[in-house]
Length: 410
Image 1 (cartoon, rainbow, N blue to C red):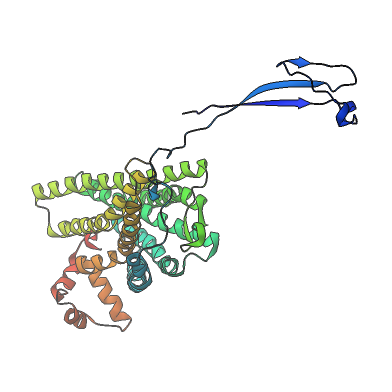
Image 2: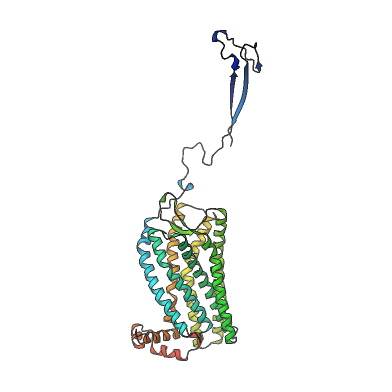
């Protein structure tokens, strides 16, 4: 709404030649509203009348009421609540340290065991080898997550980009490798596809290289636009995040979120679900031998753990995406809840890197046997002591692996 204001002003100007005329000799001319001239020795007086129009705009919160607009319409405080601050200061260092130790030892053992059987390694075990490499890379970034939660990000932009890149590459490679395992089991069991070994190994290595390349390309927007951000007014710790300071960065952020939700989670999970439904259906019909059923069981367990660990984080991130795109009603309370939920669910997802070796140990017959022989060779423990420590490790299960096919080697 516009409010016009008209202001009429009169200007009277005097001829500079008449300024020296004594005050008593000056005569006042009649102002008739136009132009008036007296004799040459008198002042020339001009009457000007004009209108000045000022426009006023009605501001967004203008009203006749004296009530103030809600504070959250302007900004939300970035100060962390006591619950989130306590979680980052107390729980995160302890929990991440435990995940770091378990993930480091477990994935190194997986790599050593699979590397010892490199010549006889199956296609599934090759995928699991690369999965362990991805998990080990993720383990390396856990100390940085603890440091950021405690004192903020103080390690510069280069390490910021590196840590975010490793985080995203691990996630993409993990989901894509699990999808490859599902497809491999589907082809081997449902369609009985058994290619020539050398040709098959070559195709497996090419597939793994393609997965790593795809993971890097999917994570590229995060690497390019990651930076250290300092919250306004220094009311919170600096953090390493995706920069959204201009339109190009915002578009890149949207593309990154789209790839994360669709390419990194939804499509791989649909592929896994389709393949394992077909595998279970075929095994149920054919009553295949127990070794093959155990192999599929471990693969399904690995996929299920991945889904349980990462799906809460994806749900929360999806809600955060909708909130940032203004697709849902935004509020300071929602932003606060999302901040807490993202931190907790991200920990659950990162903890996934130490769970796969445990699954192989307790569900993989041949892997258990290989681990027992490795520990015995290193002088750490023998089969008898392992059976006492883990009652489920029966000698029969260890001897069973001698006759197991390559499908149960994990």
